[in-house]
Amino acid sequence: MTGVEGYSALRSPDAILHRATERLAQRFAGLVGAETVEKVVFESYVALGRSARVPTHVPALAEKFAAERLVALGQAEGLIFKAVPEVLYLCVHNAGRSQMAAAITRHLSGDRVHVRSAGSRPTGDGVLPSVIAVLEEIGITVDEEFPKPLTDDVVRAADAVVSMGCGDACPLYPGKRYLDWDLPDPATLDLDGVRAVRDEIRLRVVELLSELSPAPRS
Image (cartoon, rainbow, N blue to C red; front, side, top):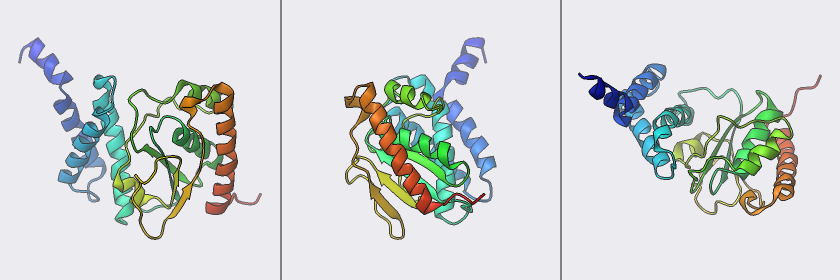
């Protein structure tokens, strides 16, 4: 293999995805079959690629997204034990409200709940700059977060599903708690408006956490 051919192979999405599949197959060995891992990895790549503005980043994000989905799949099938309640936040683009809710929940809950977020039509532009800014004002960073499409496995794994404007996109399963938070889209607001949405989300998250997983008494 020449240097040019080697470089092309290194940059090939298929090569990167196959290596990701191998890593995840080892990680989930005994829980999920290798064929399922491969299917989830490549499905995740295609789903993220539909809205990606920077295609070169998609293979790496696909591995992270696939890992989250495989955990959710294992939880939904009862193969992975859920030590704490699972909360799923949904909005249209997964760039504003659902990202804020997920970040604030992680910040406030510690290890009392596990959080995921997704969008019915995720954007390829990343988390909104205004959302990043107002979260940083209260000491929360979302550097590693990215918009993710809604998949059936994360809904099945959730105990509580909170929708913020994604309509009927979310499938309904018995035994889950579904909430609808009517909040304006931060993409349409100035910075003060986004702060107001952040503060309202925080109040609702505090209430939700008190119901799902009350803080231990000191």
